Image (cartoon, rainbow, N blue to C red; front, side, top):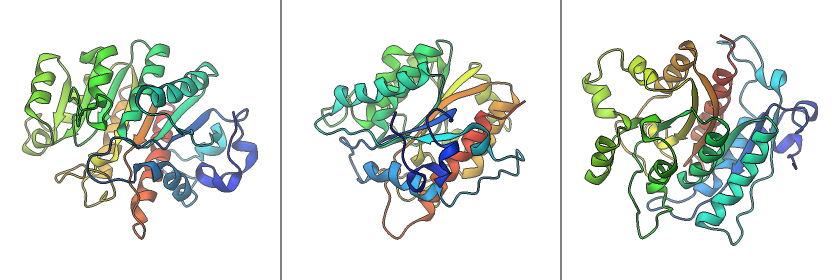
Length: 299
């Protein structure tokens, strides 16, 4: 595997803790953008997350350690999607991640549009057949197709639902969907925690515990950054009001680990960088590193 030099890798850490052989964690960059339907720019997301990560502090006060030096983080060259779209593009991602998992690496995939997530989910599911998928998102992404494409970013979870046990899918932050998606959720026992239900108390004050209780002992997280409220994440293709806070996300990550469940991998997608708005890139980079700290938290 070809890793990037120090100045271009995640956190800009030195070579001895960022080579493939010395790293437990591997960052995959999947700058794929083919079906965006509102705002564009998601293909620039992985690069800008990595660039911004150079300004993320190594030390995490919650865990009292510098994870990057304990585990090592290798950053691979971005996947080249030249001439590859839809199934062919997903196959490129799937093949790379399957290889990494066979080498016992912890894989973080940076997108790109949300379409890319079915590939890492499939690869992880083959290694962890009892896992759950936890989807952070403003949209349920369960349309059978959108704009004449079954590979649309609006259909990613419909594709996942074709090969993954639907009752092991949990969604949080959902606040924009069509009626067919709502019906799909009800008919297929998907665990969906709507933003409206959280805000109105429908799920009770212990809604995070209820969410965590739906998850298996091994959890893969797919994180569309439009789960966040546009006030903190305006640079995404389809921002929706009434979103989550950064602290909401951390509270869920923390509850997963306190419950003794293991985070086995994750992706972060749909950042669409805008020149002059830098805090969102840094928020995504911090999110990645913070989630890694939770994933490797020793109970």
